[in-house]
Image 1 (spheres, rainbow, N blue to C red):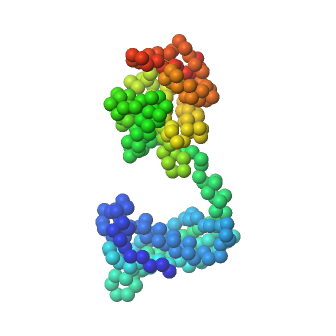
Image 2 (tube, one colour; image 1 turned 30 degrees about the vertical axis):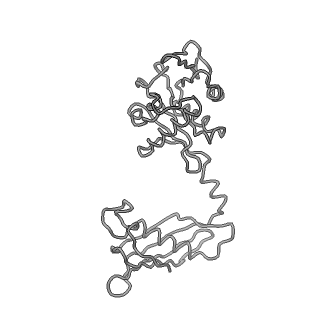
Length: 279
């Protein structure tokens, strides 16, 4: 049995599970799950347990300042599967009042093996709106380090940071390693104004960026491969600033080849080399 006091950060309006200042159901379930963890006292040194099923009925609201006791009793065990009867009481009113009850199932697993199997080295997915500012900063830092952009007044740095603008016509992907944003790339949709060298039927990617401290870890290659996977059978094209040999080698390694006839100059003193999977 473990006791808790309902604090402001435990409420439904604080956690987003409602808009009232009473104990949130997700927090209550977390307390009940913690009770099941405590109830498993005979695990090996290399073992842990993970929750797999929750069936809890939340019966009554608990106000701020209430003391809540969470309990768990092991009622069934079959090898590594453990089922618990759980309950919670608060001290509001006459004596302990039942506020929740139900069952929680946990499975015993090897800790290190579970972590290795459930934690990929790299996660690549579409960027969320709340990540756009961080993606823009990442792009600006990466391009400043790799391409010589050095001033916040540089127009292209503003373009790099304006992720919201390109999400209207493009798909922005992010790469995470160990919970840290380490890379991003933008897939330009057909006909989008952001298309630089793409022709009809081709998929272009732009704004490839990897955090400088994460260079050399294969993140850029993984991002390009993700673009190619999403492109399916469509040819993939991109451009790279002339002189940026690390990026050029990366694209060749990923399966793109230089296409000199499609090299271009978007502005004075700027020369871009074109690459494609189907020159």
